[in-house]
Every structure is written in structure tokens, then in C-alpha cells.
Length: 232
Image (cartoon, rainbow, N blue to C red; front, side, top):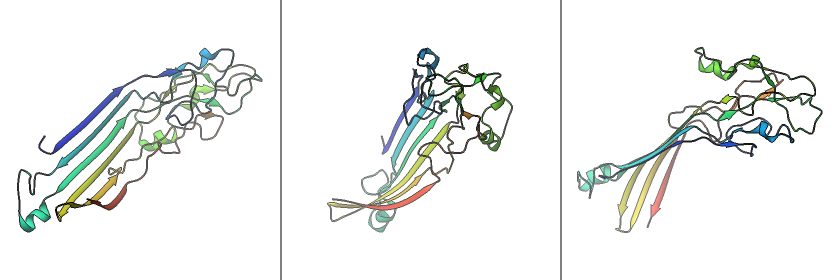
């Protein structure tokens, strides 16, 4: 009403499976099962299981100009009328993650192996964002299993960083010759310029184990673009 439109959607979800697909938001490092003879060991949260996700979009035609609540004529109409604002954003919690062994020593028909759990990987003390990136979880909580033995870590051991994506647009319509509208568009993608980080390194045995070195899929620094759209 009144030129304002709001769409909002909140999802609370939990997905469980026993295998991983490619291009998932989270999951393990190897996209493979551990023991072909006991697939129950791979049952856990799906890599795409996002617990909380909120998506909202807003469009608002500013109430100035011809045919709107505050009408202008002449030059004032051309300058102040025809403006619109648009917003779309997503806020979500992190994707699940689970560690794998860099070296598989089971000597079995097993594409990968997971480590043993020897402690709590969750770090509860307050830390800066830089500290979290350097070590998202307590890597000392995982240890190499004995040779010819499957590790006892589950497929999922925790959650990665959440993500926020917000885009903003400013539009201005110029109408002329009755049937033509020229629209000026200024669009700002990730206008808050906030990085959303990907999962940490999940391969135990590598020097970067537990460290975050990438951004979440689709996340980029702020992008500002301008355009003209002729409608007839």
C-alpha cells in the first residue's frame, strides 16, 4: 500500500542425509563416504542444512510527483518525481562442517577417513574476527586414528560462519512522449561491504587445518553499477 511493497520469508530447517553432493554450502572436505560396509557412519547433517535463513525485499515508490500523494508539476515534477528505492537481503546461519584425514591409512576400500575426536572442537572464549579466521575451531580436538582403523568423528562436527548479503537500488523514471519511459538505475551490491566467509580448511594433517582462507560462494566486495533502461 501507498507505493510500499514488502516480501519477507523466514526458514527454519534441518536436513539429514548419508552422502554429499558437489557444490554444497558445507559438509566434509572430500565429498565421499568412509566405510562402504557401514553407511550409517555417514549419516548426519546435510551440507546444505542451514538452520535459520531470513530473506526480505522492499520496494518503495517515493510519494512525490505526478499521480502520487504529493504532486508536483513542471520542473519540480521532473526533478523530484518518479524516484523509487529497492532493497533485497539475506541473513543466514553457518553451514555444517566436518573434518577428514589428509592421509587415509585404513588400507580399505574407503575413499576417505575421518579423525578421532579427543576433545571439544568448540572454542567458547571471546575472540576477535581475525582470531576466528585463523582458527575457527580447536584443531587439537582431533587426532589421527591408528593405522587400519576408521576414525570416530561424525560426518559433521560444527557450523561455519554465518552470512549476510544486502543489495540496494535507487531508480528514477523519466516519462516522455506518453509511451516512453527512461529509467536511471543505481545499484549497490553488498552495499554494507561486509565479507561473508567460507568454511575452514577441513583436512587434518595440513598446516592450514582449521583456518578460513576463502569467502562464501557469491560473496564479493561492494559493487556499484549504473544503467539506463528504456521502456516503450
